[in-house]
Amino acid sequence: EALKGGFADSKVLQLHGSRMIARRYVPGAKATTQLKDLRLAQKLAAGEGLNLPHLESAIQLYETLIARGDGDLDHSGLHTLLGNS
Image (tube, rainbow, N blue to C red; front, side):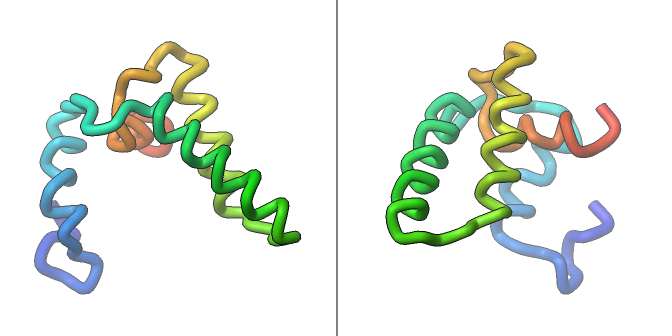
């Protein structure tokens, strides 16, 4: 709520921020699907010799989310790993 309307405001925050505040993590695209796509990007990046540390971090977060049984959540579920949950 504090970020809405300021410089940190964005369309994503407007659409998903209230869901995260309410802890409603109904999937648009499941974390398992998003992890599959991230791994494809990782493979393509490696083939080009690119080092993408933020991609590696994102993969680790999704793996953690899925390992604890939350693979059916969407990316908003990452909030439970990063904030007070």
